[in-house]
Image (cartoon, rainbow over all chains, first blue to last red):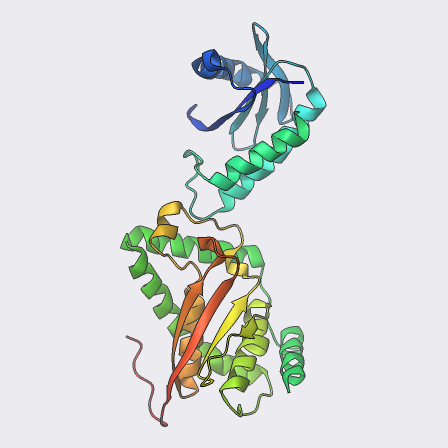
Length: 134
Length: 188
């Protein structure tokens, strides 16, 4: 199945720390993705108080896109745009990405709440995506 | 002979070494290095500073090591190398580097570190790699300081580092000369 995903990590002041498009690239959606995720942040803020879990499932919809979110205890938002519903796979993907983010955070050279520029991180996110999403 | 050093190292590690939480140690070292980078804004100055700190640690630590173990005077530089790897590194870091790449005149050798606890969690920014930051340079200083207290003047440096993209970490130790019995030079 060929599908497109857009994954973003959003910092505490709503600025993106990391973003990537996974799967088939679509030219027209490049900026639209950011819009959809940004618009969904308000809904994440609402949803996070309705649940005690980190994984908030699907918080928003836009045309055929679903927006899933995962909030870490330090209020970093992991956001995923996807078409097909697959709660379990996405939950596992988020959990592993959270762990990956933690490892980045433990690096003394990484300043919290700044964009993640590490190549290794990028590679690992892509591996996780292959493992769970495709 | 080699077996014996290994046993001494194991024994000292088990019975006479204070253990602390590894993560606490790693994070403390990490924030120390990052603070140095911020303060000096120059990676070679940071390397130098780490080496200096290591030296000051080394001159004290070697006595500590002797007190905790029942080592006798080394018979030669090759025995010294074994002691550094099998007793020194084992006692303080719980890793045993491999001694390798001896030079023909037996005055230079390399310590190959397969595993360096200080490197855990660390990933250098590309600029630091390009400018040659040696993250664990403190180890070089420690070896230099310790050997100087044992009347051996040495030159110790990192030649390869996993954090800079090499496949292993290698510390090169070069014996310059044996010192006569004398008062050690002051710290700076």
